[in-house]
Image (cartoon, rainbow, N blue to C red; front, side, top):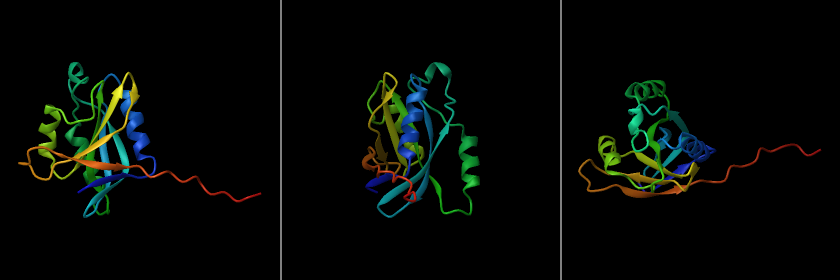
Length: 155
C-alpha cells in the first residue's frame, strides 16, 4: 500500500469534523475500497469520542458497537471499513504511543491523522502498518483530487 485517495468531499468532512472537535480529538471511520496498491475512501463517518472526558484532549475511543453496526450495514456491498481518522489537537500528525496501541489492533488499515492548531485543521497525514509485528507504520501519500463542479445547461 502506498497511497490513499480521499474522493469527493471526504477530506473536507474529516478536516471539518477535526476542527469542530477542538480542543478534543475528533474521530471517525473511513469507508471505501482496498486496491492492490491504494485505498480509495468514499466516506468519512464521524463518530463520538467515547474516551473519558479528561482524556479526550490526547486520546480517542470509538465505541466498538458503532464499528460493528457499520460493518453490519456494509455486508453484501463492495465497500468496507478501510481505516480510521482522528485529530491531534495542537500536536503533529504523526502516530503517538497511544495511537500505536490501536494501530497494532487494526493493521492493514489507513490511519488518517489531522493536526489541529488553535481550532484550525492542517494537512492530514496517513499511516499504514503492514503487520502487527512491524516496528512502525509507513506513511502513505494522501491524494485529494479536485471536486468537479456540477454541470449545468447553458442558457
